[in-house]
Image (cartoon, rainbow, N blue to C red; front, top):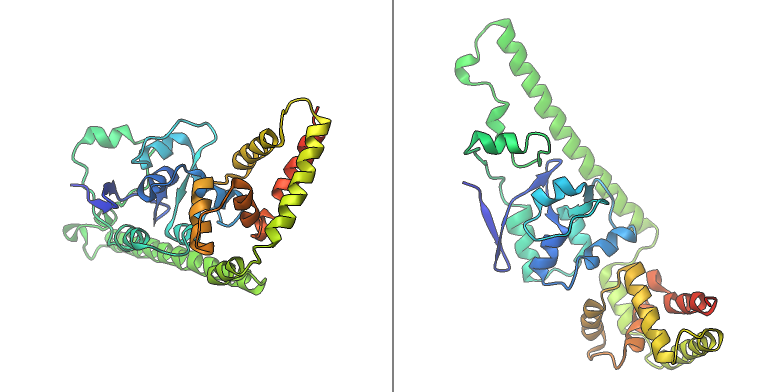
Length: 294
């Protein structure tokens, strides 16, 4: 029997890759009820997650075996997320996040028995690195004797297990060193960032609005493709979403949690987003590009 974990009302089978438990970006989208996977993959594109530690990019043939959710075929491959990556993406853990971390990522590995030989042959060439039976590598007691051959076999097994434990230790050390490096470079904590954004002077939005209006009028005067500044801004927002993976619905929720009200317009929401250093001057840059188009 395979063990299924209940995550926000949906059941998921435990999957591992490189000895780490993982969830696909599509599964996380379904569990968290996100509008798309871009909220997860955006962190990867920005370099916030480290490949091989926080996530893995795997080919579609492997990804479809790991995913419990429907997902479109893509030749570029897809992402599977480890526990450390999940914690970076969702810094402020809610009840759903705690359930995922405590029951999925950290529950004792389950021993999955192969019920049919046919199933084993089916995944022989492309085999997900699932929770394997530890007893596969353990010599049966009846085969262990005082002979030199059996002693060598046991010695080799112990050596292999020691190497595996050392690799796990080295990965944890690399992860901790990476986090310390970020802290030394002056990266503020999530709480500090939230406080910084919450304390922004709302009157700065008026100046931002004037700048955007100026650049939008510039685009309107140089191009015959658009009939109004509203058309121009709609196109700019669309390009920001496609290029940077901005999930507007999620950003609206973050705005409400920070400011205490909903944004009056998409422009105000974009102004708030650009208070984060990683998104600084994105809209102006996009409008400047559009002004050079004919």
